[in-house]
Length: 252
Image (cartoon, rainbow, N blue to C red; front, side, top):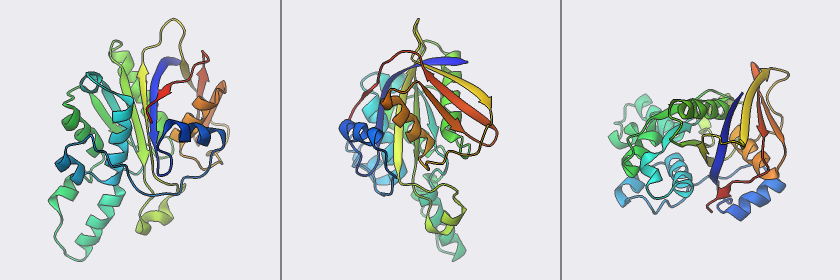
């Protein structure tokens, strides 16, 4: 079992852009169906123009979750199941008809795009990771964050999860379609009374039936005050328990 403290959270989705809206959503969750991205006015104009929607969403929640010197010092994990498919698919369509590719768009089509953009914008040279693990992407991102905390106990870790709807040509291959979203969790080493504990159990059933992204199911659970969350996959069950009744602070 691994323990950590959830210091702060921030989330963004079309139509869910404030702390109050997310608290209301947690009480009565509804499917995410929207597309779009925040303005991200905190970014320099050139960087903002080059960002795709996923990058804007993920950097928006980073900006809301971290401030001041922490932006340069925090280690980061960026977790996205599908990554920049909305950028990659048009590039593949261009290749199919022998049209030239945009170098700028190509450079933003790799899976660690958001980690790279964050490091440039925040001037952050601390360790970062970008990962995808199918339905377990958020859970594996959380575990990777715990590993970073273990390696450097004195440094907080920022976990950033996000995805967009899968583009049309690949949509039939997506087994769990949903709208755009991004979530950031600022994690710190646990003190004498840990806020969160994570453990793994044997698989007991298939994927969760509610259709929500695991990252947002975690947020719903955290805001609800419930004691235990189980996220199911074919190979294992991820179990979070709350060890003190406290709710993180969001920047909306």
